[in-house]
Length: 219
Image (cartoon, rainbow, N blue to C red):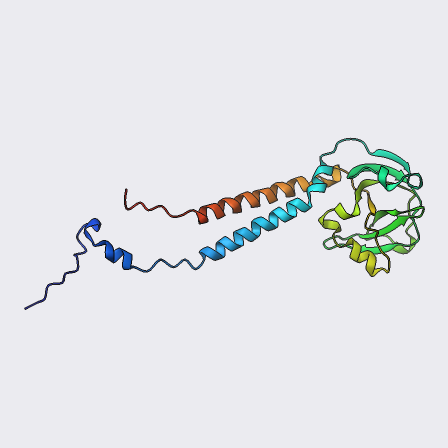
């Protein structure tokens, strides 16, 4: 005589099945949810870090005024210098020149302090196709003036480059980045929008992942 099973027939409606069977089922495995959450969190934080590091370039790029004429650097004290401004100034560079290069930059750079004002350093771009041996240092400069400690991410390794050349960059040093103008720095606007887009996309994704799944079985 066949033994009848007490298990509910699969043809029965779902609400007729015992709730204990649903509770006994193991929780679904989601091996990539935590990985996705971690990647999106790291991406959002990295984008925020880069955007924060470019805030000085962004403010400078939005300036539309003409360069401020400072005159001779020899007659200016660091306390009188305007921060993150487009300026024009004259001065004689010291013979203590630091030569260095930047990643993804084809041209080279020369960095030297003002001879009569060693807390003010000037960065000059040296085209790759020019002869560095016969490079003549100019006596007037037009560019972005900024404290060395807040120059931005692109100049984060500047102190190490100066130290590698056997010199030291003062902690309160100023940089005049010759040739850098607001129009030439407008690329940072597009990069900032891209970074903000990355941040918004990842933050929204993190919130969606962290949101508890709605139980629709009771509806």
